[in-house]
Image (cartoon, rainbow, N blue to C red; front, side, top):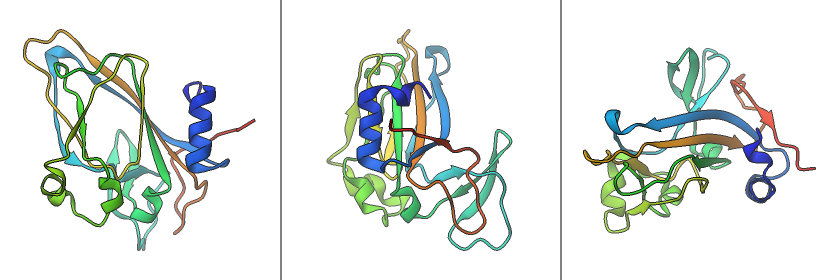
Length: 183
């Protein structure tokens, strides 16, 4: 909550999502040097909900992550969302940086299998200092590289997902919705 109250962050959220946005999910990613991991190309399509009612049309693939129900959301909802990634440590080429396909969020109709071919010449490695903020759309195609075997640097990120919509259709409710107050 405190991170999104930083004046420049709060202003960015308001400008991109409006006055009624809220935090709908928070994660901590930790990539310690002795237990590095990688993620293939993907988009962040899942949302956390309170429960999963029967007969859903636009929301698919019900799963449970850490005891919380999740669904794949339709692109129209994901387009109303924003991801804030606060780096607690520097992100360097040695400690498994994030790589992105710039502009891929505008091609939401492309399947995840098409992502590498779609942007193979335009892959961008995200490097940053501790304390930096990356603002991205959930539909931006991204991947996480594995850390170098010789690194001693960890990479931790506070990942917050926000949405401009407090309510969801089809009888769904956000698992949590922490409203932003733009006072």
